[in-house]
Image 1: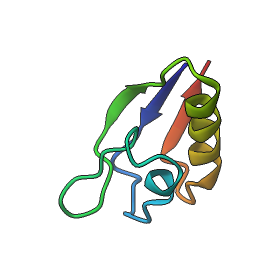
Image 2: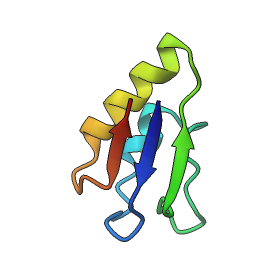
Image 3: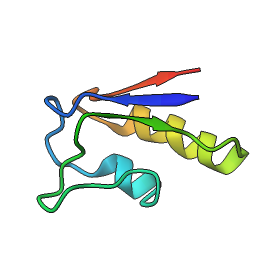
Image 4: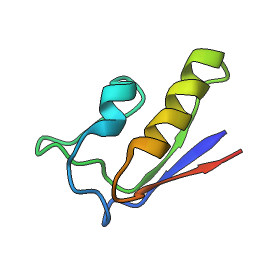
Amino acid sequence: MKIIVDGAKCQGNARCWAQDNEMFDLDDEGYLPSQTIVVPDTPEKQLAARRAVRACPERALTLEE
């Protein structure tokens, strides 16, 4: 499972970070840069990833199974 981050859409709400502050590494200004995040293969991390994607109001995160 991967999360594709569109950093241009990120508005710094940090709702993803609130779901898992280890998986989502915000920059110094509180934004998530464009990147691909490989989600660890554990139920807790996969649940956090799904919640983070749903929580993003800008839809800057896309989940790929």
